[in-house]
Length: 207
Image 1 (cartoon, rainbow, N blue to C red):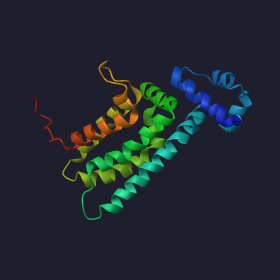
Image 2: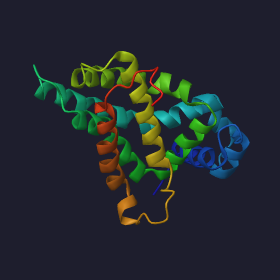
Image 3: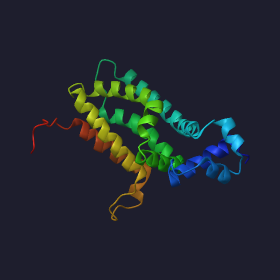
Image 4: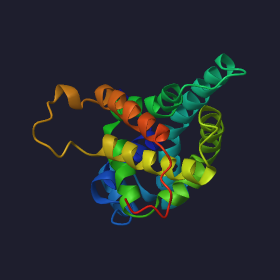
């Protein structure tokens, strides 16, 4: 199957960024591994930063579209009543599980970007809109939860999601069948949904 130059560069950069890290991977390494010339990189992307942005967008774009469509369905089905927390979690997490199955190298890349401290910029450019939409539906599901507490729990949810997708279970007793991505998703949805429903602990309570 013919792979065009731009696709070849994106695929190679995704693999090398995931294996070596973004900072440690040079454009020269990418063009050598992709067997293209430097002019092709500059023609299609202009810079290493733009290459990373387009790389993230080609995977994240469909994920965000799926999330927004699922949230739209939830809102349409729950007019005048509270959405179920599990449904909201599934809307946000299920598309990520699907991309993890289809593109494991991208999952590795996102783990690298997080470790290198690059996620705040990536999040602002590629996730801000869908995050605000998710929060709006989540507030309807949990109207009694104070805003600060809600945001902290979303912060913990993102961490749990990243760990569930990027890391293997640390305990050797976990069977391979129960560690695949659909199984992880079901456990993750149940886990974070319970966390969002947990009582609010006063900040000054040391117990």
